[in-house]
Length: 403
Image (cartoon, rainbow, N blue to C red; front, side, top):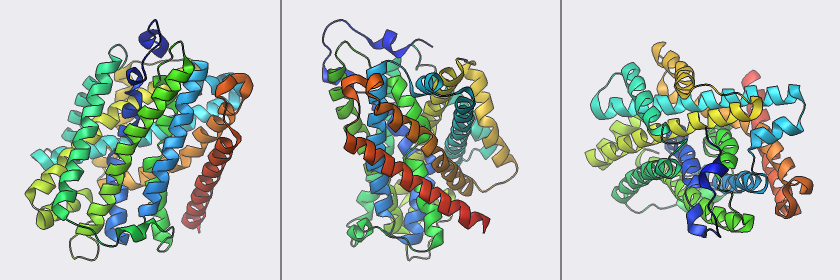
């Protein structure tokens, strides 16, 4: 795969707008089928109570993606490459193994979500639908190595479809009262912590922390690149944040406190049809399909960056696609409920966040590596606090599961 610098560097001083695009690829991972499952389950079960989790996670995600992009701009290398250079062989291998597990958990969510969407829209059985999802997303992925701008445009278009789907549902839902109360931090019992952890894992996606450092443009003027990256992240992840908030608000307004079933994506689809009309149900399914197709392409692309960076090895994209879709096929073949599989996959992702975030914060604060783009102290502290909170949530969840 050609390097990003070789593909994107142009003579002269680039305009800020020329650097828009990479964050839209990253943003798709923030509205993947796992977000559908966790955010809508949270809204259905607890109303607006966990809205603050989504808002906080989106803000943290913006900071983390900024650090990842800044690392790529300042060094011209990816986060996995720098981890391999800076850390011992055993640590590098540990980071690679967990990153591959995170990527597989991501692909599980994308394939299952895409399969469920095809089943809802066209009645395709889940196993064949998984194969269709794999083929279409692989075709999209083939644009990535040599046609980066076209790849970004396709992914951005699918993000727009997801946004339009939830805007349509929210419009039909009408005014929401009491939503602001969900901005006050708090939980509603231990089960809400499980969902909150899943929502966090679904929003702060560890595989795109690795990926963004490989996507950024590296022009002659790093500060211009950084300004373009800030705008890119602000717009793209702002859209993703609106979609995530809309998911919870729609579920809270349509399902919470009603007899409508909302235990699975299939339930949510049928309940939206019953409460908001067939148009809202179709918009939900279409958004889910666009999300699954786009996010699975991005997940496999991230897997290539992870292996190349940590191990200096590459495998053919088709082989990686076949390997990463195996867990989804297994889950559907043995009859695991798809929505529950999605929620658990997002909890797995939450456990992977510190393994990407802690090295990222440590590297971006290093002035010998980053030069004038090194973190300010407040940025490093904010990154450390975010990592500590995520680790604490994961520890709570682990203890509760064991005991």
